Structure formats: structure tokens, C-alpha cells
Length: 256
Length: 369
Image (cartoon, rainbow over all chains, first blue to last red; front, side, top):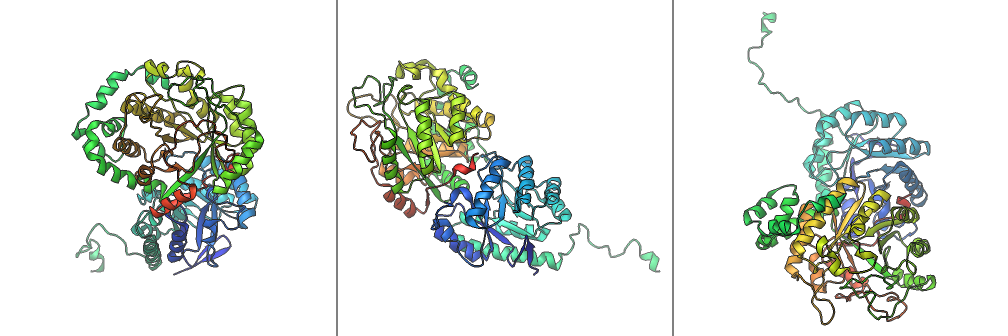
């Protein structure tokens, strides 16, 4: 299986994880570790940036684990840039998951503010991973301004509905020159495998692991599914055909 | 405006519609993937009484899907019990002869020190309504004073003007709780005979002023025990729906302040049982997967221990409802009696043993600039 190159790093694991919704930070740490994930996103609003012993952060202290601070909660580009700068200083990373969803109900991303913030953040030296609608044009525009990846959604955050945007994800994957990370809506390992089979470079999973009855076991299930999906993609899936191959081909007369 | 919606509805007709819902309509509401206000009427109706276990199970699932296995904690800081209103059910009623105080900055910082020692990051500032002693300028100064200590500041004070809200949001105000108490306009003034709060419409417009000012979260509710709780809850839910569509960038939260019979003073007109409160909480969750549902220390230990699994997403712990209650020993009169006296640490332990993470911090003032 090929390694994933994203930003300035090489990743063995193509499963990115989240840290919200777990019943304890200890269990969160165990699940993240079991998933084999090397990139874990942390909501800035949940951590105390001034506290070295923040309970969430101490459970993520592992040499293989890279933190991906996210701006969840901000509503504008201006707020996102400010939050990003604070995160960079406090967490000593220039990686950022850019999330701007002014709609607190379905947490759908704002394309205009996201693009505006991405332009600014790239200029400021951030490695920007923007969370966005599965909009192929927006993905190209973000790539043009220098984001390190694009993170289109499969379905609304936390919905566990899987790849409702499948046809658009395929276009995005086909056109993208930066890694495509399917984020949001992945509710089952089969959804993750499906995204990887389509050719996504990675997936980000949180709710499905955190809210399951056994988050550690579910994290392992996702790890296996992501690996299986990626291996299948690299091995090239057989073409799906709607017709049986005719036993008497129409052009066989040419060989006569 | 929501008042236009309200004016088209007749309280008694809406009440009849709720009470005439059938088991079949409840079953249909339970089957729907997304539920509307008609479904909500069925779920809060007497006919839904026999479906409580299923409502609780669904509510638990939906809440965990959206909010995860977490419960947020907040604490009220009562700044003043001065009040020019005459709300017949309230301890701060202007005509009550009680020790009236408004905390000064030094006193507030003493209270803050104790509150911080519990681990709180989210604070709710509460006052009565007294424009010269605890009005907008006082609140503004208090917010500036305490901002360095808290990551999220909420208010539960008298309704303010849109421009005043804008000013406070600029300083770091995140949430405002403003309960209509009752949506029964014809009877509102029986409970609120005098003072600024007697103006039903001005209070009803408050969430609109907040929405226009760009507030992050609005808390709604009715005071359970004044009028028929089912009808008042229906109007609250309709108010919620109206606001969600109009001020779509704002989050919403519902609270369930419940008056209970007690010796002396105001007696509730409508008594809600524990199982009815569970019915209401779960009905809200079935109506709306995203709305925050909050329960205070008005409720008992046993009740709170159980409802955190049924849809509730935030609770207070260790609350004192009199100004100076944490550090100052003022013996000022409390606004309501506390039924769950456990400390924040004990509540955190209870939350953990129920399989949830107690969340002390879910915001930062740098998220809103």
C-alpha cells in the first residue's frame, strides 16, 4: 500500500480521527491509538490552550500522532484566521483543519468564507485542510490558492449516512491534484471502505467511533476497512458490467 | 414577527388539538424520520403517555448521535436580587421584603475565585430587573471584569435593546436566556402585573433583537406551572421553529423551569409530574436533534441522575441562587430552592459513572471576534 504524502508529512495510515463525543478522554485516547491514525483533529473550543495539562491533549500525547487543530465554532473567515493563529502559537503546529459553518443546525460549511480564509491562511504559512461541501469547482479553487488537501463531506456531520455525495466525490477525486480526504457522514466501516475504493486519499471519522458501544473495537474495524478499501483501489477493481459477455460477439465476423 | 404567528392562534383551540391527539397519531410521529410541529403535539399529548419508554429510547439515541457521550456543565452567578417587577411566583418580587443586594466588583471577584476553584469555564450571570442598580452599564462593566476568567459568558437578565446586545457581544457575550414564562397573552399580566416585565410584546420580541444582534445562542422556555404546560410548550416549540428559520446562524437551547407546590407563596396552576417532564424533554429531542436541552438544580438528585441519559445536554451543579452565595455568606434571599445540593465534583462523578464525559469547556472567547 502506498504511503500518503500530505503537506510536508508521510502517513502510513489513511484514517484520520476526531476527538469529540467520547464518554471519556481516556477512552478517546485508546480508540485513537487503536485506529492506527497518525492525524487527529482537536476542536480548539474544547481545549484550554493555556493549560499544559489539558485533559484532552494529555491523552493524545504520542510520538506517532500529529495534531490537527480545527476551527469548529467560528462563523467567519476573520474568526477562523484569529483562532488559527492562536492554535499555531499554543499547539506549535501550522496544520489546520479549516471549518467554517455558520449554520449550527446541520454544521454545513460556508464556501465563501472558507475560500476567503484559505487564501489568508496559506499566505500566513498554514497547511490548510478545508472542510467543504462536495463541490468540485470549490475544490479546484481551494487547490489553486494552495490548500494542502480538500475535505469534502460525504453527508452532514454526525449523520452517519455515508456517501450521499458519491457522484460529486468521484468528480473531485478525478480532478484533484491535492489529496482528497472524505470528511463527515462516514457512519460505518463499509462507508470508509467505499470512499477508499473510489480513490479518496484518506477519510476522517469521529462520531461513528466515539458513539459506538465499543469505540476501541470500532476504531480497529475502521482501520481494517480503510486498509481494505485502499488496497482494493490500488489493485484496481474489476469493471462492473451490466451485461453478460455475449458468447457470439457482434464483431466476430471480422476474424473469419 | 412571532407575535403575528401568535395572534393567528387561539390558545384554547391549540390546547384542544393537543388533547385530542390519538395513539395512532403518536405512533405515526414515532415512525417519522423527521418530525414536525404536528408530531410534537402528538408527542406531548396525554395519548403519548403509554409510549414513554420508546420516546426515551429514541431520545437517548438521537442525543448521543449529535452530542456524543457528553454533558456540559454551567453555573449561575447571581449578581443582584434588586427587582422592579412584581412577578407573582418569584422570590425577587419587588414587594417582597427581603435583603436586596447588588454585588460590587470586589465581591464578584471573590465569588469568581470560588467558582473557578470548582473547575468552571462557562458562567451564567443572573440578575433581577433593576435598570439603575443592575442595568446595561453595570452588566457591561461586570462582563469586562470577569471575561479573563471564563471561556463562555451567558446572561439571564432583563431584556435589553438590540444595540446593547451588540455592545455586550463585542465584549464576549455568547448566550442569552430569555424565557417568555407563558405564551398565553390573555393571562400573562395575571403573573406579571407591574414593572417592565408586564409588557408581553417587548419580552416576546427579545429573541428577535438578539438574533439581529448576531448572538451565538438563545435559550428559550416557559415557566412550567403557570398555564397548561402542554400548550405553553407547543408555543415555545413554535417560537423555536420561527427563530431557527429566521436567525439561522444562532444556536438554541430549551430549559424546563418547573414550579412545584410548596408551603406558602405562589402555588402552581398546572402541576407537571416527573413522567410528564420526561415526556416533554424527549418530545423536544424527537422534534429537534440539534437543540440543546438544559436542566437546573430546581430538579431533584434522582431525577437529574436519570434524565441526563434521556436527551438533556447541559446541567448546572453546585448552584447558589442568591447573590453572594458562593463566597460571601450574604444570606440574601435565593430566587428558588435548590433540590440538588451536590457539589460540582460529585456531579462530575455521577456523570462519569453514567458513562458520559463532563464537559467544562466547549467555547473560547477568541472564537467570536
